[in-house]
Image 1 (cartoon, protein in one colour):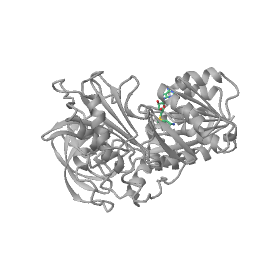
Image 2: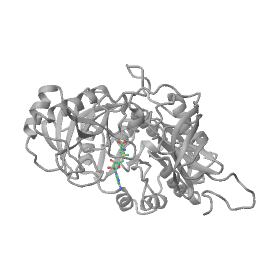
Image 3: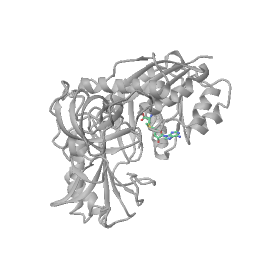
Image 4: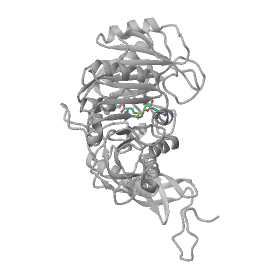
Length: 475
Ligand SMILES: C[S@@+](CC[C@H](N)C(=O)[O-])C[C@H]1O[C@@H](n2cnc3c(N)ncnc32)[C@H](O)[C@@H]1O
């Protein structure tokens, strides 16, 4: 069999390692999944648990035609950027693969990954990629910890009752993580109160293996700027007995909980919240959060950023980048609860036009426009259809902000933007790889010019990176 990752030319490269073989690797970068990346000859090797700057010994666990995965055996020479990870279960949990690196080094390597993805996938080189922006230090002085205002924690049976945590990397094995240091302290308190209320309410954790039990996840969201809090209990069946008792137990433990809701998720999939609306069991129908000039209502099933302090930095920059075009009509193409479009209006835009596919989020966005006294119109539906319906061809709106899920923008939306281009286009992305692909399509043939890319560290300790790409209509 030809060695994986080889060119097949006449110059002989060192033999590729075989499955099960131990190799020594210098780790030079971070992969999108957070693994350390090194090379053995010309074979790219991904090593979970290794970080850039490490020299490691690792055993090849999986051979693929163009790369390999290896299990870390020992760190022979630690990276100068290593520090003791501030979480006892970071290695088993797997949610924070960059935790062994100092925050400054994490940001350096994330920026390098963004530059690499732009070049490799988008063919984009030489564009200005700014240093990674981060949230300012909060009262606790640690912007990189305790930032997570939202967490969706699976529930499982433990030796002394239900436990909550996160699934270990690539598995459905729950790692107890109720003390997760990346999660906001109020969110941790809420999850613990709901967890401790399950047994007295007679609600057992759902067991995937046997199909027995009810409770799949506890989803928590807190308003960092308001102190409000909300929990959603996700069950397998629509009306399991015990929900009323659960509400009593939770409110007895947490008198200041703002909203307790119930969502039904019967599918055997990784989906967390059910497809239907969540039903309020106690308190109000959501919470409020403050970001920049806005107070936002967030209902149980609407998307909102997990790190509000860093989101504020992101939104402020995205809106500032709209420039003079941002004084006219601003389209918020993936609006969520309306944060970016409404912020643009608060900053001087005439009005926001928002598109969004989740009905509860559209309702929140309309409520948020009214609550903040801002001129905006939000429609339910996919941006790729609604944009083209409104601006079929020719003159586009003054400015458009894109903020799609990780999969990026469908071709129909990119084509719509090319045939009715706005003067200014700001693309907020949570996935450098799809950002690179979409920027290549938008700039093809000179329709838009990419001016700069501004990375923002919305998810410290993880490999995720948010970025704001700024484009101007060229012709
Ligand atoms: C990454 S979130 C951004 C939300 C918002 N801009 C914010 O910062 O809170 C992406 C949003 O796009 C919505 N969405 C997904 N597909 C969509 C589509 N085809 N058209 C419009 N919105 C969509 C999701 O429901 C989600 O609210």
